[in-house]
Length: 402
Image 1 (cartoon, rainbow, N blue to C red):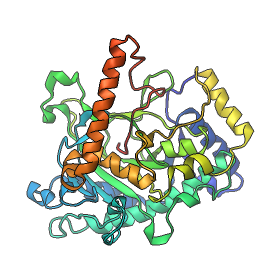
Image 2 (cartoon, rainbow, N blue to C red):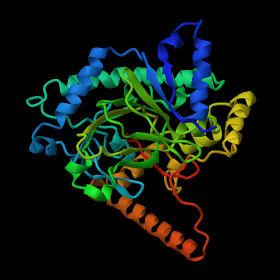
Image 3 (cartoon, one colour):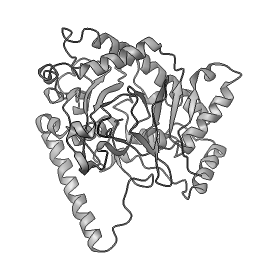
């Protein structure tokens, strides 16, 4: 039976040899059946979580002119502030306001590949208006980086691989880059959508995350995050105190030969009168210079047959089957490395930044979209358009947003 709720796992159980086997079994179930889970007791102090939420919300209250000083389109890194409704997912506008941050790096040198521009300094809000924002989020990203690396090693163990199986996909030491967003989703009354939104708007459209794992801190009490089960039903993933929501990305699905499932999800804007929803997702970084052949040909080693058979049984119960998994983040075949694919995806999601810094990539993306639209129209006229929608059987846009 397709899942009807998202499971809660206790990371503290993985530290005790007596309880670790049961934890890994529960984790394997979540990876195969759901592709999402709540994770509690991750080892980050409650005080830091509270600081992150407080500083994150405070960012949206600073004057607009301060936010525009660090607007994303000021730099080629796709780091910085995005105004309301400036991003696109699944071909439609996302109704949210946000700031993108990452593990900081120096500006790349001359002659570096274009995707190295993603490794850059952050655009921080002024310390005069938010003196604690930078230190709080720097510390949070540092701690979350360690949590994500540890948890990925547990995922490897849960599917019968060595704990170090995924290590080669991470950069060593200071070159490692993780990313984070602080997001505000206004309610539909503030958005002015009215009855046209049918009670809700698109906070973020249906999509799958692209890389390995993401970790969402739901920073207000609103519902809105939904995940899609194999029957195509949208299942609420409401805030649960003391937890992070973990999403499995398409990269991990590819690396595990489809054993770990990457699940379609979306965010609905709050209904009128509910006020803004706040969300702080953290995205585990992957080595940008890794090639797709590293993922799809070399891989991490063979997942044991018994584990693959277990995943096949899950799919059979739900009307699916275990195929060779395509990492759809590389759709279009142009990008050769994860960094190149990430850059193209960012240009697609933020065309205002692409227009300024990457006009050639943006032009190529628009030409590809036009070709796809013509092909879709041709197939429709031929009476062979196929099924549409955002179920797990489709290939929605690969983005990283909650």
